[in-house]
Structure formats: C-alpha cells, structure tokens
Image (tube, each protein chain N blue to C red):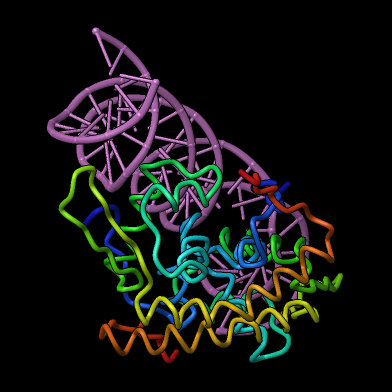
Length: 120
Length: 120
DNA sequence: ACCCTCACTTACCAAAAGGTGTGTACTGCA
DNA sequence: TGCAGTACACACCTTTTGGTAAGTGAGGGT
C-alpha cells in the first residue's frame, strides 16, 4: 500500500516480471546489489548517480515487498541498514542478462550515449 | 516525436532495452506478432483484450520507430495494414524469454491470477 | 556552537503514461 | 437506408510516476 497495489492479474510471465522490475532505478539496484553483495543505504545512493533519497527508499521498499531485496536494520546510533538480494532477486538478475545483452547491442547499433558515471 | 523523445543516454543495456519494451502492451504485441508472423491492425486489437485503438496505434508506431516492427500499408479500400516483426524485434522477443520464465514462476509462487482471455 | 552523516518521512509539484469518446472516408451487406 | 468494418486522428481527462525541498533526532568532528 506504499504506492500502488500491483500484483494484479497478469497476461503472462513477462507482464508479471515487468511489474516487478519497472521503475526507473530497480534494475540498477539489482545490478548494484548483485555486484557488491551487501550495501548500505548511503552507499547505494552514491552508486546510483542522480537518484533522490525518496525514490531510492521507495524502490527499495517495493522490491522488499516483492521479495527481491532483504533489508536488515541494526539498532545502532548512527542508524545502519543493510540491503542485499534474496534468492529471487538474484535469479531475476540472471533472467535479465539476455535483455541486457540485447540492449547493449542496441546501444552500439543506434550509437546512443551512456551516462558518464563520475569516478568519485 | 510521437510521444516522448527517448533513446536518451542510458546507464546500461537493460536500461536501453527497457526503454524499448516498457509500455503496457509492447511485450504482448511482440509475443502476438512472433506467434502469428503477420497481423492486421484489427486482428491485433482483438488479440489484446482491453487495449484501446489509440494505445495500440501509439505502441505500434513507437515500436516501428525503434526498429522492432515492420508496417506495410496496402493502398486498398477498405484500408489494409500489415504488421510484422523485424529481425531486431524477433531477437528482442528471444531475449525476453528468460524474463518470461521467471515471471511465470513468480505467478505460481505468489498465486496471482492471470487475465482470462475470452475465447471469442 | 555549528555543521555533517545516517536513514529516512512528509508535503507538494510536474511530467509522463494511459484511457475515453468522437470524427473520418470509403465499401459491403441486409 | 442504415449499420458494420477498416485504420486510424484528435481532443480531453485521469492516473501513475518521478522529482524537489524541507524536516527529524542523535552522535561525532572542528
């Protein structure tokens, strides 16, 4: 109930998968968490150039609800929250591999630019 | 320039692929055209339960612009327009296979309903 | 004393996506 | 004569999505 209901009736598997990965930052979060294993909120924020805090929280919560992301809170001061992928998150990321390859090929074909990720 | 500019700078391949498949009906159109090879406008409309004419035209035009769909107009009366997939459309559909399988598994896991497609 | 960091929350806004309903030019069918 | 089918275009409206800016509360650095 955070944002929208979702998990409505689906036409097919792709529909159901898209319901879960659509969202401007979700595939990036998936990639980032798969790369590093575990990341804290601020680390993710710095890893995704241009994301706002609100959007990052929102997408992470939805992914948690959808069973892709595990969220662990440590009752410390200053607060510490660690995010990681669940098994479903990992398998989704793998299922996205072919799509990623297709997209990379397309980028080359049409000569589109990639976002320059700042080194810092 | 039909709706939005798109093909902007991308973060990665998935981003680029999503730019092209996002849209409520695009993956369904891809599937439908892959199944039948060639389809006319009204056939697609009947094949996608719930789509409006406006949305169908819009999605088809974007997919044509993106080089996924081939559109052939026959100057007859009544008008006849045939849609089919290009090579890129076919390969995109294949790249979506793993995602579709993941989604199908997810539907079973969470026990979501599928849209009942009327037989007529 | 003051700002920075952590991980958020809340209120408000703008843009994009999607939906509805109508019009069109022509033909075939009853 | 009147209605259905063909493949749309156009105007208007609602919903969804994303973005901006501010606030929170405790601790640590300078």
